[in-house]
Length: 361
Image (cartoon, rainbow, N blue to C red):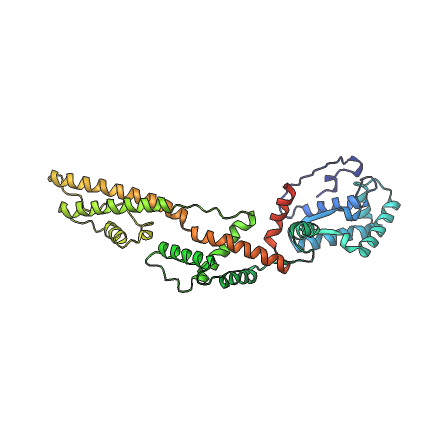
């Protein structure tokens, strides 16, 4: 890539934006390094001291490589290597002697104040900004960043379980949640002998989805609608069963009618979603039997009503499936936040959220 991609320092207006779009290996890192060197060497750009400039990259390896390249540029200029001096003469307004002097001084400054040499990954940059404002977020500035959140989540959940004693509000909530989970459990699903493990697994998933956006759980209570739909399904299925038994028509072996009948009779409505409901309960008779065809049409119409109601139930079921877990999540989230502050811990995923909220407030 030609060094002439950058303007000379005296030609750069501020505020200033330069966007490079190029394929991998085409020299974007070279151009970024060149811009960094241009800024710290120039005497024409205001506030361009080393500590006022930060370069942000995606990985530790990229940050390390860029630091090495900046130092190589400066050392080459300090030693007056022709290639480096020619390249720098095109981007800064200094004579060769002053360029050498500035480069040598910057090498010494970097070695003496290495923390001012800021080439960071995105995560490390955000962490630095967060630490500067830690007190505003209610954290000790000496907090620890957790990459693995599992241990603290386990600890917070166990603290909640200690409060689940007979007669306590926590016990009532826990029992209600377990009942909700059992009601939604399909017949072929394994029995949750240890519901606490099931709850914790779901808490991890929900926390990962909602915590990064800083949102509380939005709990939608569909219990009344679900009960009304259940009653309608039960009533329509009873009428359908009567029609099928009275029609004298042969049962369709490819129909899910028997399993629907079984699920409704045993109050296992959670087994209904996902069933193949295309085929009606009975076989279609020959055209030469108009009376039987009429009975078939009536049965098929009633089956369509049942299928439609099951579709409505499925929608409510899907919307309410996580309601028990979401109710637990709000308590679980408060426990985690309390533990993080008490122990001086921060999840890596929290930092961007805290900063986003802080900057827009």
